[in-house]
Length: 165
Image 1 (tube, one colour):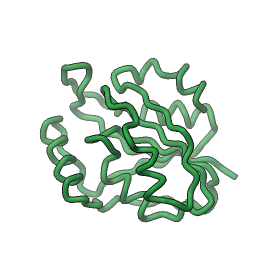
Image 2: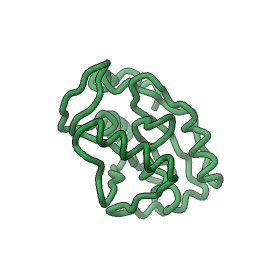
Image 3: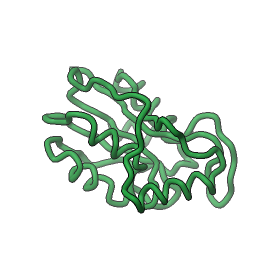
Image 4: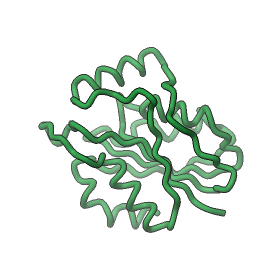
């Protein structure tokens, strides 16, 4: 069976060790590309139909509001998971959990018998409770120990990623 790297990542203005800067490729996507290259996996980007704002403060306010209201934003597309047995699921840590679009992805797909390998990017929160959040959301899947990469170090994460996969 094939492997899939499904990820939610945000470019635009991001937070890096106390400062903000614009990036063209999000930190989670950088790690996702590493994993896909190592595992020879297909990739799928989890994208909201209505994306968050480009500036960081507005985007985080939008993400916080979605979390507080437990919203499930509509996605642009969903993959057919029937040909995959392992899914590497990537996301930034937003407010101690995954972006709500990742919850939409989990709620909208059949994960029965799948193995989910979670990985996240963060600036200090690590995985928080996301491994158990995933297990609670898709109890028919097996969730493995995840990988947390500090977003500002994503470009230098290959050694950590290789050890984890």
